[in-house]
Image (cartoon, rainbow, N blue to C red):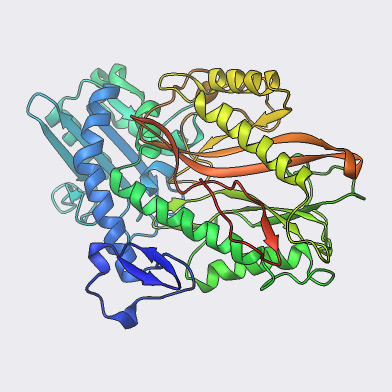
Length: 459
């Protein structure tokens, strides 16, 4: 453990012995690792996933041979999650073959490539002996005689649909006829691979969300915002620049918007055709942001709220405090209905009904989160599909343990003092495990204040 700026944080084993000069300390409670250490962590986690997770997933989905094919700059999104840290793209045509012999308890990880794919996947192609890459792939298939060959094509799961038509046609043209009937979609395996998080990944995820919260807290403070001067666009670009300065990345441009007494209700979630208006932030405004970062091949997605104090105010108005409580209640209705085996549409319908029965006006649009910002897995509503998602990930795909979600939703609240409705829009990373649901790193239960009077607390 270490103390820094009044906060306690855990120093992972792999960086405890690094020279202090190599560590990039910030005002935040978590460290940002230098690139060389990030690569080490990424490759260690990848090896753990190949060794312990992949065999289980292949057994569960009934695919004993999984073949992924990609060409450079046109990567299958699943294959992209399997590349070592020093591979930023596939090379030429990259073919990965995973073969699981459950009876022998073996798991082969092969690359039909002239070189190993990192340390986890070994080359199985000597081009001098067999110049044709497709023929070598067919030899590997013939030698193992798989019962089912999984390929990444899918109508319903976009992330599991990474095999392009050219490579599919080439594969089928070279595949012996006797194996054609054994070719099947690997969509369930692909989704499970992308959605499932390991224990070590969840330790890291906690740190990512903590960094995300810290950036938002700084953005929504007097350090960045001067009421009557600073605009919402300026705060957005400050957040974007902060991510760059920390050596991180973001997977979408941040948004900051305002709700106030004189404005009509306009939420950026319902106006995708344009950006939120660039407004000068004023005392009495309710601010909202949508922000996420990418780090160590994981992604966050967070929405929080802040209130700009008027002169002589030391706390937000009670009607806004109560409105946030309504938003927390919708969160509770949703997360209490996240039960293993339920589909996204089932969870959505029950959570919405529970919220309405409590007198709330909820909307829920929760999505998987992890290897991608809008990741693969159980979709629980979309902002424009509150009756359910009519495709496999919402209609038929069940909630599985060891998965992460952006608990994204809102509730419409009438504010008589403002003579209008407002939306309380919230989003937090949540983990669903064998013991049920928990937030990855807390959630917002108090409004951030500008200027800061008391600390932002969550539970």
